[in-house]
Length: 103
Image (cartoon, rainbow, N blue to C red; front, side, top):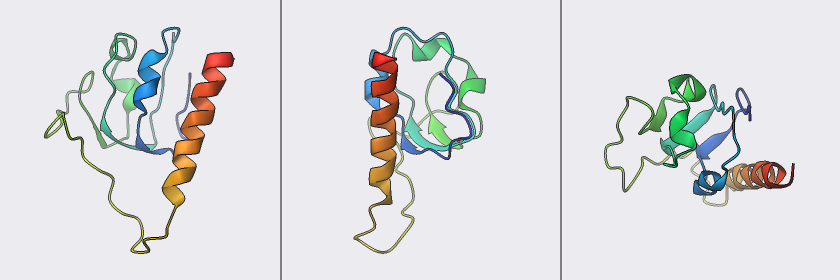
């Protein structure tokens, strides 16, 4: 499951923990933030799977989160309260997860 270099942003959805059939996982070179979801599957992948996402933290990375119960939030990209670019990231992850489930 290679999502590297796709300009993804935001947190890795916790729903990805439910995937149990991944042999390969790579989200490197994106703008992902926060705690990596903790599952048996995701903890088997090494640091290379998460490279160049400086705001990601938690195992299997050596970078610890400041508070694992409250992962760091991405910085706002706009002062406009009506800016809804973040919704496209949510929909992209939903499409990716649905594709994995049925693909």
